[in-house]
Length: 264
Image 1 (cartoon, rainbow, N blue to C red):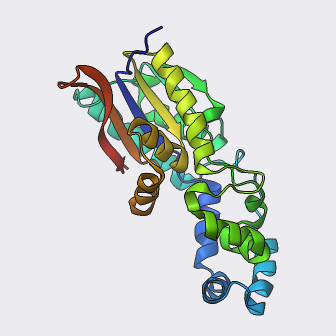
Image 2 (image 1 turned 45 degrees about the vertical axis):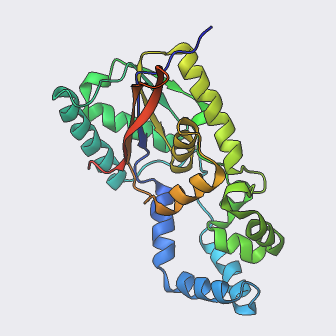
């Protein structure tokens, strides 16, 4: 069957989660700042290792990555984003989605719920939870609460990360960016096969949505890394792709209209 291009994709990163809030609090603590300074100066420094052991026990997450919900601030972000999109839709700026796809993680599902509360026109749209839209899995790192803490206590992994880099490094019991891109590519292919000429809303996660952009725009590793460095991680950030016609080869394709915009 010939694939048909989607009419449009609207993507939203989940609202502030319990893990986002916990990481923010951790990084503002004096103990963590002291550890981070020592680690960056010398990852093998005895004091860095000692502080890393204490931080691991102190900041071990109380919830799993899939089970982390959004915060009160996240609820406000979701609702305000929904209000802004409802306004755009009723002004004819934004198309109402025909179908909604969401990561199965709790923070994504909760984000959608509060967006729906503010944007009643999408409440009747079919919602599908798709595991391919989950966040990049960091595996064992979650037990440490922080990348630097993990690498300080697992120097062989730190060496692997240094040699492979952020794009190619595969977290132990987790994924690399190419792993995420493979499942996102599979999802995008299925969307073009099943939902051609329709508008889709996606609620997902930062690395997953960055990988979706990489697939739409056929990025190489260096393109992904450049975008990751330049893109601010905004909760409830909105991106939009629309189908346009290439006059030279007369072929439909998705083009980015806006990227990583805060509407709340």
